[in-house]
Image (cartoon, rainbow, N blue to C red; front, side, top):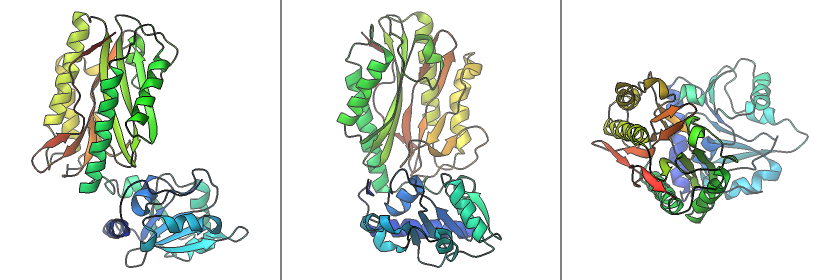
Length: 375
């Protein structure tokens, strides 16, 4: 497996990101950032090293210094091909030598550093052993908004991913549901996402009947029946950026309560979307959607946050939840996905990806939010 460049950005784009990250670290009182393989490294450098390796790879960002990528010698050729490589200094280390000595030589011996959340414990402990005077904070804690505000090129990629997911929904609704297993419909959804340009499918939730009351139900062997509500929640990565959308369909003609619950969720989703505007706190989106559901008497059945950020991963900060006072900024992208879940009976969820504009919000999903009937 080799490194990859997941999005068409230039070395200058990545240089600007690394400079911005280093400035943010300094503003947060950090001596620098230590970024391990994962979405932060991809976003900052364009480099995606092998998915499974115990060898230390670490981007070191220190304010006022050139960024350095510490890599194993055997992976250095792939790192040199990354789009952001011209903006980096590579320091390689060979098997049998101490990679932590290489990394620690780049750091303030008494500094406090932000560390990407998915760094391996053994690597962080290795650096800390070499520099016992250092201390650390997770990037989510120290710089939660690092990747939150997207530039124009990122917004274009997210919009394209959303349109591709919409295309998958328009096709899946034409296929039969009744008499088929959830896993069969989920497989169709995955194929449709790939057919629409997704290189990675992260999830295809197909939750029928009582399974719909489980927000993260894994598609299983249950046979979908006439009269079932079916929650569809699906997404992945297209050209390095995420899609994530939910729609709830009904097999055949729904009953009055099913229609009513779906309409409540639709109204809640609309309220959450209408609350999106620059300067509003993230929690205001959650409050707006939750108020509609609570007023209808189903407040206890809305059991999750209203939304999450999306970018080079399908879940990232910011989060639309009570207590999150981070103000919305143009360019932020996140889901608005209220739901109602009735144990033993059915569930309903409607989800769009929304981006903050200068005067409100814009949806990146455009399929109907009305209750869709399927065969």
